[in-house]
Length: 265
Ligand code: KIV
Ligand code: NA
Image 1 (tube, rainbow, N blue to C red):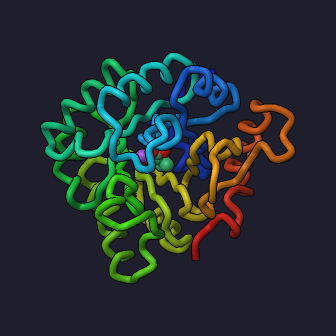
Image 2 (cartoon, rainbow, N blue to C red; image 1 turned 90 degrees about the vertical axis):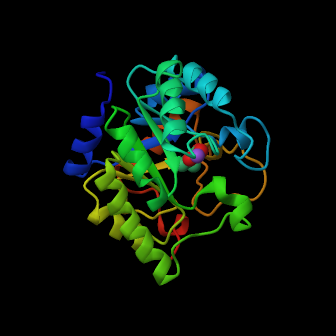
């Protein structure tokens, strides 16, 4: 199959074809996802939690992300590769450019993702004008956990929702090529998606975003403890890992995932 490009992702939004995304952190999982038809693979800084065993994403370093991005890229043939910038590695636009240079160079990322609303507009413009494709991560921002006092649904309050709608527009105007929306009510996910010209990928953002993303270990039932509402274990009833990941892709494409039980009101 032809490699997925940023133009394909834009076309999928235009055509109403849902974009199936998953995290991966190494070549074997990347190859599994690639075979199953995943469109976008994210090397998420969630690796701090699910690979390194920390309780937040805060300790993850740029070197960690470069390493995991490179070994994930090695497993891909078709899927588009996006990699997270870790905590405080993009605090200034100059830092963000240098971190992106490493992730796209040594790490072979085709797009970088980082957290933040309006405060990131200048950074996104700086990167975008220099040829760095950017995904703007808004809604729940896990890197702010110590500032927020936990991981909570965002945008239930009307003013917060309004700010998020405005931020999405602002970041798109600054040059963001994609928006990732984490843990917001379905109605807000739908409104931001309808207003956006670029694809909006949701995690716990309801059924109406242009695509969905989940953490690979979560859909394989490998993550211990209480799982977030939006997680679905695709190993339940699946005969193999390949079937489970293919079932996830099919469920995103036909809209059967996420169901109302995976969404926030
Ligand atoms: O790090 C990550 O895995 C992410 C996704 C959950 C969106 O940012
Ligand atoms: Na992340």
